Amino acid sequence: MKSTLLKTLAFVLYSLSTYTSFAQTTTGQLAGTVQDSLNQKAVPFATIILKKHTDAGFVQVTVADDKGSFSFENLQQGLYFVHTNFLGYKKKQVDSLQVVGAGKTLQLRIALAEDTRLLIEVTVVGQRPFLKYF
Image (cartoon, rainbow, N blue to C red; front, side, top):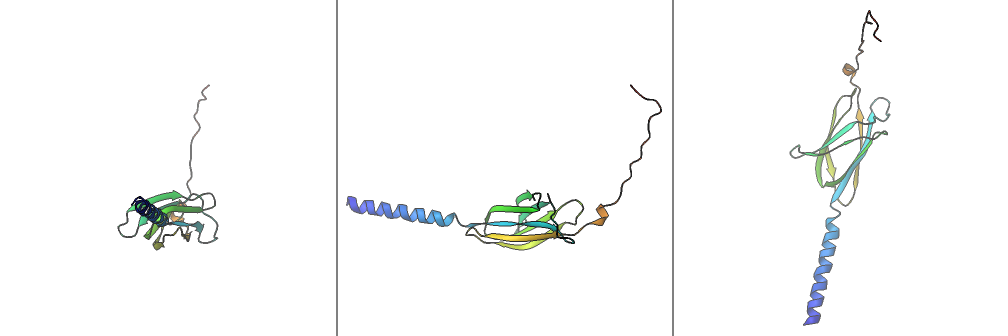
């Protein structure tokens, strides 16, 4: 009787540990780079917003590093989309990004086009005061 109980308990514990190890691999990653669409140079410090495809719910936000690289980790399986923006470039949205589990990483390259309307010249003019203050 005691032997049967120990065997059953051992089997249950083994089953739970196996189930837990499978549950840990249901998340995936999304990683990539942000580049200029004309010269393919990195766009450092661009903002990348990750949202759910089903309801456009906010998931995560990150900022690209100085080489234009970014990553989102521990994502549940499913469809996502990203919004990317940076001063001097047009905003870009990439749809239908399928994240799969098993620790796999979806690689993405985002090419931003320059927005020349934001790059106008500004001239600042000032006058020196007549009297000098000490």
